[in-house]
Each structure stands twice: as C-alpha cells, then as structure tokens.
Length: 380
Ligand SMILES: NC(=O)c1ccc[n+]([C@@H]2O[C@H](COP(=O)([O-])OP(=O)(O)OC[C@H]3O[C@@H](n4cnc5c(N)ncnc54)[C@H](O)[C@@H]3O)[C@@H](O)[C@H]2O)c1
Image (cartoon, rainbow, N blue to C red; front, side):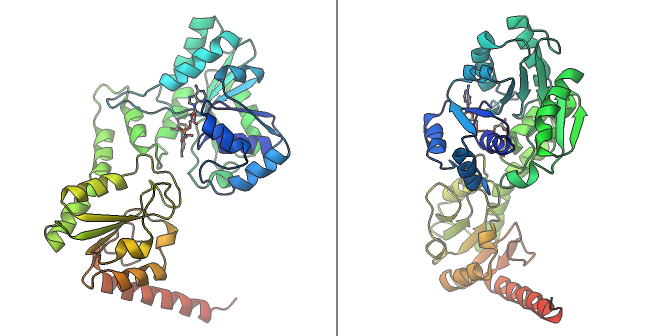
C-alpha cells in the first residue's frame, strides 16, 4: 500500500486483519512514527483497536519509499490526488510514486489505483508503464481502478458491505484486483476503468466533494453544469451570512458562535470544509467570531465559552455532540435572550433555518418528551 492516509491506513489495517501480508509505505516520517508507536494519526471509528491488534500480531510492516512496494505482488496506490485551481486533476503524487516504482517493477506485478482519479487516468497509468518500461498491460503487468467510496467514520463497517467496484484495463487486470479485494466479502462489481472512475466521483459526499466536481468535468468540451452545482454548495456560507444580516442587522462587534469546523459530522477532518469560509465571511462583517468543535484538531473554545453572550449561534457541522438537549440548554443559559439560532442541518429539530433560541428550545423539549412518551407507551 503506497500512502497511509485516511484511506490507505484503514485499508492496510483491514487487509492485515484478514491475514494478508501488508507492507504499508508512506514518506511522512511523523505518520510512520505514530503508527509504530501504536497511535492512530487521525480518527476513524474502531481503527485504534485494530491498529493495536494488527501490530501485536506483527502483520503490518512499514517502509518509507514507494520503490519498496516492489517487494509485493499487488501494489495498491492510496496517495493524494488533489485538483489544480483550474480544471485539471493534479497527478503529481501519482506520477512521483510511479517514477519511483518504474525501475523495480517486474512482470507479474499488479498496480491497483485506490485513489480517486479523473476519467482516463487508469488507462494513462497502464500506458505510462508500457511507454516507460515496455511492460505490456494484461500480459506483463495488471492495472486496475478499485475506487475507495467508503464514508469517513464508517470504514470498518462498510469495507465488508459496500460493493467494491473494479475496472481493470482488461479482464485479467480486473480479476487480479478482484482476487485481492474479495478477502473483504463485499459484492464485487466488475466494469471498465472509466465507469469505475465515474462511479466514485459521482458517489462523493466527503472532503473529496469539490475536486470530484472538477474531475467530472476535466474532459468535458463545455464544462459547466456540474461546476455550477458545486458553486451553489460553496455559496451557502454567504447565503447564511446575508440571511443573518437581514434578521439581526449589521454584524459589526456582534458576537457570532460557530459550532463545527470539520467537513463532516463526527469526523476530525477539516480539509476543504466550508466552515472556515463562513468564519472568514463573518470576520469581514467585523463580527466577533467564536468557534467550538470538540472533534477538530485545530484549537477551538469549549461550548459554554463560545456561546457566552452570543447574538447568533450557527450550527456549521452537525456533529452528534451538538444534537443534544444539554447543548440547547447551554446556549439558552449563556447566549443573549434574543439570540438567533441558525441551524441548516436541523440539528435541533426545529425545522427552521433561521429561528429564535426560545422557540428551538421549546420544540426540542416537546420532541424529546413525545419520544419518551412513545417509549413509555410501548415498553420492550
Ligand atoms: N479521505 C476520504 O474520505 C476519501 C474517501 C474516498 C477516496 N479518497 C481518495 O483517496 C486518496 C487518498 O486520500 P487520503 O484522504 O487518504 O489522502 P491523505 O493525503 O490523507 O493520504 C495520502 C498519503 O500518501 C502519502 N504519499 C503521497 N505521496 C507519496 C509517495 N510518493 N510515497 C509515499 N507516500 C506518499 C502522504 O504522505 C499521505 O500520508 C485520494 O485520492 C482521495 O481523493 C479519500
């Protein structure tokens, strides 16, 4: 496995746990040190225990050069594939790993791209190996795309249930990748490289979201529709700020508490989150912004401190930590009495994007009481 990030490390651990001998490779020494010390470098449900189990069994070896991967028969690439600021996927990390591998690749190797890639990239990789090393795809080397589609936070749950899509450059490549991934027991869907590439980028809902729109349109002659959709998403922070100003007036020196900094519910991944954009837009209105996110690696404030004397509270990420009566009670106790509650995720069940704190508290309490009532009415 080349690349032990949020995709590569959980996958390497899952393979190792199923009895596959795994060599995990990453050039980030800090990350390798953390894994060697038995510490997960990021949150992913259940993986800390898995790392401890796999390490104790000595099933995961580590290395720091992509070329070391040639020791294995099957080489799975899980490195970063960002997009450039214009309409193009940035394949520099993939190219660098392939260039390191080229001198040591030999007949019989399989190169399986697990990273998210734009349509045409699997065929490019097969062509690159043939051009640079004369290795004939399907005869000398096997090249396939087996995209990672798992939702962050649900890796261990979904690896054995979410259908595994495999698009090889030919049947032999598809079967070779399928024989590796079938160890997880999830249904395997065999298809072409381009369909596998598109299937991933059109599944997306995590930190890949922005770049997947770019990847979708990289080869379009008249790009527009999908990018326009992504721009609507990116404009939501502005929509919220304008809506707040219409309701509470100028934000100059008004206190706004932003709850949530990460991209998604119950993850610690801040990459490409729109919450920092929301905070910057509020700061440009000269508001006093306080942030609380118990999951984020960046330092933020405790809830009570963040919402103290707040004129506006915005739920920017719907962490389950926020969807509790205690959170509303803390806001009610600490924020100003006329505080505007902005809840685009409906975390508090009020079904109102811009609502008054008092109304939200009453709605939440009524909903909780009726849930309790239902439970009492139908005892198990
Ligand atoms: N994070 C997600 O939820 C998610 C979900 C589905 C798909 N993906 C895709 O999976 C891929 C990996 O994503 P990620 O979030 O794990 O990225 P990441 O940046 O967290 O991890 C990539 C790792 O690869 C290492 N690396 C890069 N080049 C290397 C090289 N030449 N040799 C050795 N190590 C190298 C980096 O040090 C890093 O640790 C991306 O294409 C991403 O789009 C991510």
